[in-house]
Length: 271
Image (cartoon, rainbow, N blue to C red):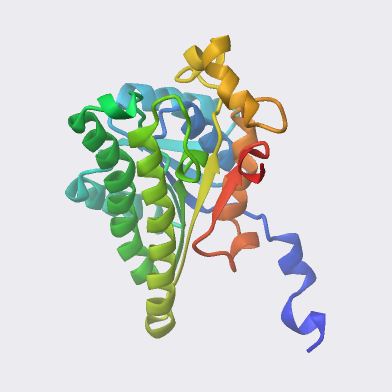
């Protein structure tokens, strides 16, 4: 079969086209969530950011509008399936479709492994794992009815390897996200073959990203040293380092990728 029989110049020119796509970003009030919102909007997507705190979401909306983008904010809790179902229904009513879910909400709590409080461990697992599963379920059912959709989960290099700075709960939660991503991708791909839908489920796994939440670590020479010693490129990540991968996993360019976790880590997991 010749190349022109499998793809066209039009396809090649549009493999990163996100214009008019409807994108939902959980944790849309954080540093990464706001950066993703701006990036999608600059590429012509219609963006919905969601989190529990409406006032901080409005800051994201304002930042998107400053770059000429289209963005709205709706408060929700990623661990509340009823509330998320209402969110899906409102977005569908407003926009007529949903194309992409970015599961960006999450939290961390650091403590020595032998001292990790069970309640804090469970809280991290609830937000990072259950708070990924429930949006995947709610939006996944919508995508099944619609016939298509893309989900990008947020993992971490900590899901791949340990770290001496008290990441017991966080590392366990991100390892769970990795395998949840694989399971959903596999199960829904087989189900979709029979039912006539296609849902891509992949994940991005950053290393330490410089942000207000990580400022304390990044500015402490003792605490940052173990991170830098494992980063062949010699620096922690910046917010902009994550944008390209998230856009790629949301665009037609990644249509044949499923169940993958892409490490954006300055070579950390390579050695």
